[in-house]
Length: 125
Image 1 (cartoon, rainbow, N blue to C red):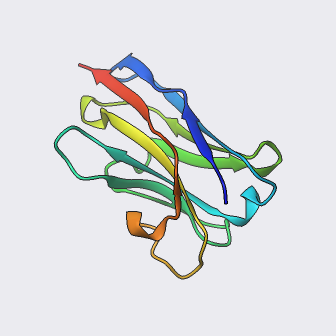
Image 2 (tube, rainbow, N blue to C red):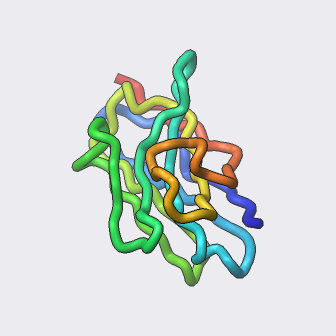
Image 3 (tube, helix red, strand yellow):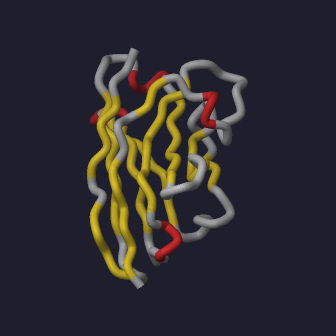
């Protein structure tokens, strides 16, 4: 089991950058495949970025490709989401999640077993 805590959200202007962090507990953190999702008011939770099960590949939603970068530091039990050129439509609560079983589609929220509490990102125009 792993507990996840996000941080780094805030209020920024369009074009600014933010780096979200997701700190995980437990000595088995490196065994989980990690992902980021977001949920805007009145909308369903949507996929943002994720690692493949092996960790050798990364995947991004089309809406963030080229602007966001997912990375991880297993020594620090932390996953990051670097967000550049932020747009008002990026405004949402951002969640990190851990996938414990291989073979599940990384893009589906139901594939993930553990979730953080979320961190708010607000981008003003």
